[in-house]
Image (cartoon, rainbow, N blue to C red; front, top):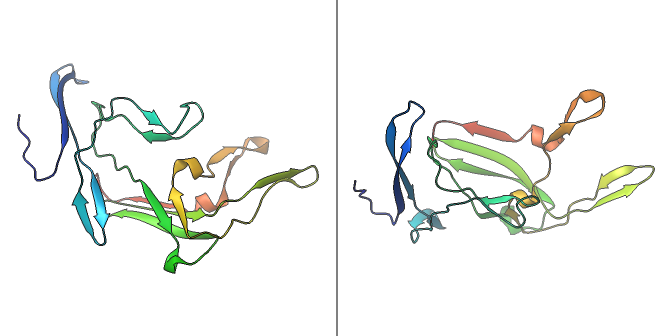
Length: 172
């Protein structure tokens, strides 16, 4: 098998058994791109990741890279390592950002400057107003929210995340 492309690729081919109990060939091809203004440029062929990699201790830190070798994967992973910059480069406590793959997917969310949690006996836990910042790394390590089981076995979610938009327009 030969792959022909103008992009630098890291590739791997192996045989695997399908759910239908037949042997199939699996091709893993990985490329990397950087942005220069409005243009996307192919970067050097990236290393194939053969095991999940975490920021730090896997039990207590977010996933940084998922392994590339997954025989049942039917689409494409899009790993984004980015910094969200405030509109007009002004100091601001929070702002909306989004990631779009034209015609395929759109994900919108909010980023905010650092804040602190404090606890008092009377008031419980309270989050401070976010600090004014120019930029925030886009990272699960800094993410807040999700949902948990609250009193009376009701599902409680962080209100801002209720309005986050994820739209899948087609397979990647």
